[in-house]
Image 1 (cartoon, rainbow, N blue to C red):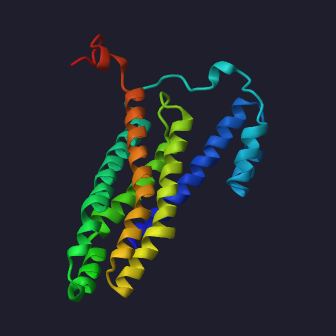
Image 2 (tube, one colour; image 1 turned 60 degrees about the horizontal axis):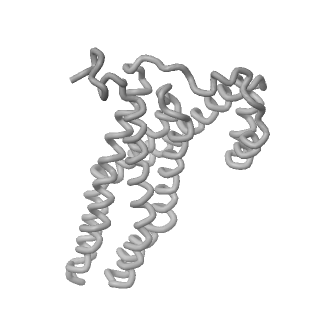
Image 3 (cartoon, rainbow, N blue to C red; image 1 turned 135 degrees about the horizontal axis):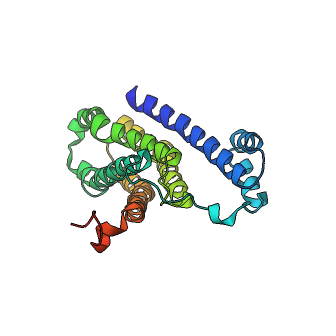
Length: 231
């Protein structure tokens, strides 16, 4: 129940972040924010694309990006949380891809049903729950984006995580359920390994993108050694 509740919370936060973005973007461009927010929520894909295609230029071109702010803002803490969870999940997904899934071939047929049931039970906290927490952190970052980070990078990260969720639900989980029901077979396991590669790539790319965001948000003095942040 906990991962499901966290996924629902992430979806609510994602919708709230989308509305917040629509209101802010419409305000910068002199259009009624409520109308744009209604458009992108009522038609989450088509409405967003229509607004991106037809929106006018900002009233003040210098306001395309918010001004630099305090490096102790809630947005920076959300970035750190998202970065840590993304790299943790990158480690677990690569462990599954390169270690756990291949080792299933060495579990005996008589023991496989017990192994599969225990595996599904034991991964709930270290893998499933932490992945759900990453979705929540990603949604929070959409809402609390630090001013130094461009909007496109945060939305790209959210799209990568959305793809990972779709891949899990549409491809990996059905294959794992089928293997648990039918028993291990090399063909099914090979199909599972192949289907998991795109999800592994998406989670890894998001972690790398977040590392780039962290560099963008880092105080310049921390890199140049010319301020109170110097080490």
